Every structure is written in structure tokens, then in C-alpha cells.
Image (cartoon, rainbow, N blue to C red; front, side, top):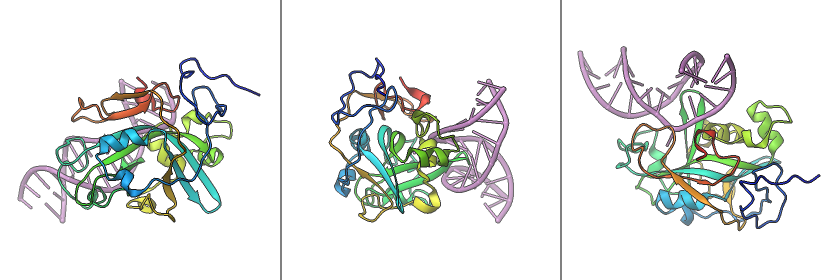
Length: 231
DNA sequence: ATAAGGATGACCT
DNA sequence: GGTCATCCTTATA
């Protein structure tokens, strides 16, 4: 059974040549070429852009979850009023000052988790927030983690930063400060050669400060971009 | 539109 | 020490 892709999404390159599972999705296949620490040893705005199209992978024993990143935000250093590093180093944000490529997980609104990747060399804070991804592997486990039925649409599984963490079972207790570039880490990034199509840039979502800075990046027209700001 | 709900940091004593 | 406003959100109506 073939599904046609949506008109909006028709021009999105799909180098793998695979059929999308649902309208507005890319589909794809997960290869193992893990991103190295040097990838993250760079300014957040550069890493945020470069992470679009890369794949987040979680290994849970025999189970593997994977999804293509479609939406990110850059958070800068102490000069960025919206960043957690804005008022200097604290116990909570210490990971931001550590080596690049580590997970900074925090809880928000007492209800959800958000995951960031630390950037820049040790001692210099900065990170990229993972806001949304397109599930590629382990959709059934993601549905379970999200409390959805087996027929729930792929696009609802990880189309927001809190949803993404819930789908992947990411928590502060288990995953904060995890080295995402480690060969044995349960969480990491891989790349499969996909070069993101049309990248859109807007101000960041859900913040009160520095609302004018264009630091949010997403794949234009992708169905899994968070509902808070598809435009 | 709004409720849910907890950790954190700022700012006091 | 204590209090209080804030917060990189989501699922409901």
C-alpha cells in the first residue's frame, strides 16, 4: 500500500528513496555513524542548524528508538537572557559549562523534561534544545511511553520538547550529564548522509526574554515540527 | 483559554 | 534559613 506525500512536502529531498509512512514525513533508515565530540565543540547556533536531519538514537537493552531531528533551538552563554546560563553557573546548569556533547536535562513546569546538548569547549556555556523529531524506529515503544494506543499517529509522538523526552524515556535522574558521544552511551546521535532541505529560522518558542533573536531552526513543512510554531 | 504541577533561582531575613 | 515568582510545556475545554 503506497501513500502519497503531501503537496507541501513534495520538494523535500529524500536521499534514501524510501516511502514516507505518513504524509509530511521523510521516513528513512538508521545507520551507525556516531557524531563525534568535535561536532558539538562549536557555537550553539551552528550546532543547532547542523543537527537538523541527524538522528537521535536510544539503546535500551535489545530495544532501539530512533528519530530524525526536525526542530532545534540555540541557547547561548551568560549574555543570552533566555539561557539557563544567563545568571552564571549553578548546580542545575553545571553541565552547560562542561565538555561539549553532554546531555543537559531539566524539568519544566513540574510536568515535563527537556533535553539539550552542551556546546563549545569546557568552561564556556551554551547548548542546543532538541524540540522535535520524526520517529523512525521503535514507534510502538514510543506510543507506549506516551500512553497512546498502537494506532496513534507518528506525528504526535515527539513533536515538542516534552513529548520527545517522554517518547524516548529521557529523565533528568537517568540522563543528565550523559556523554552523548560515548560509544557505550544509551543515547547518542548518528548521521546517515541526509542533508536537510529547506531550513526555516524564527525566534525561540516559550520564552519571555530575547524574543527577537532568530535562534530556532526547523525543516520547513515537516509534519513533526511542534504545533507551537510551524510557521 | 487555561489548569496541571515541581524544581529552581532571586531575594529577603 | 524561608518565601515567592518564574519557567526552553502539554492536553484539555
